[in-house]
Figure 1 (cartoon, rainbow, N blue to C red):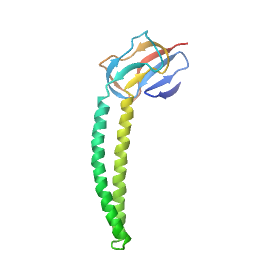
Figure 2 (figure 1 turned 30 degrees about the vertical axis):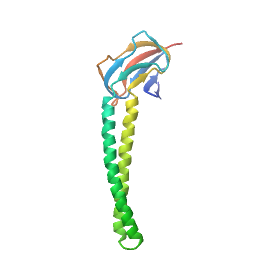
Figure 3 (figure 1 turned 60 degrees about the vertical axis):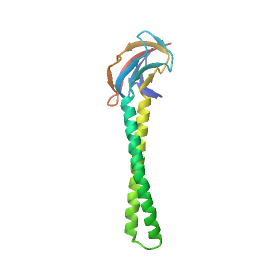
Figure 4 (figure 1 turned 90 degrees about the vertical axis):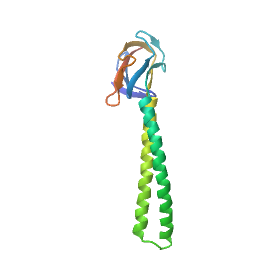
Amino acid sequence: MKAFLFGLFLCAVAFGSEIPIYVIVKGKVKEVLVKEGQKVKKGDLLLRIDPILYELEIQRLKAKEEEVSARLWKVERDFRRVEELFNRDLIAESRYEEQKIRYQQQKARVDQVIAQRRKFEVLASYTEIRSPASGKIKKILVREGSYVNGELIPHKVIILEISP
């Protein structure tokens, strides 16, 4: 069995005529847009997971990014002042190095928050599950209103029978 990540969905391709479709996000199944036996084309939207958990986390991380960026501005300004004094031999090298470390640490905090926000933006995009191939819906394993938790273990939601 081989696993592939196709844009907005994760699926494992078995050596046969079926493709189990998994989700790698968690949340409430908002809409199941297909029925068992329905023919679908590659790229058709099959189901939606409510993205609210990811949208709220993105919003929180944007606020956190503003906060740490404001701190970075202050720390960077202080570092530039200390650097200028150090270059004029008016303060000790240890004071300059301490301020440089503070600046580098704060810059790393900003980078961490940005990376976390980007992660949640990607996960939010995975809440729309599309067909990896043309075929017929063989089995739907979730219903509207049910919950999936594909973050821990990919959650199988649909089995697609591939068209020959």
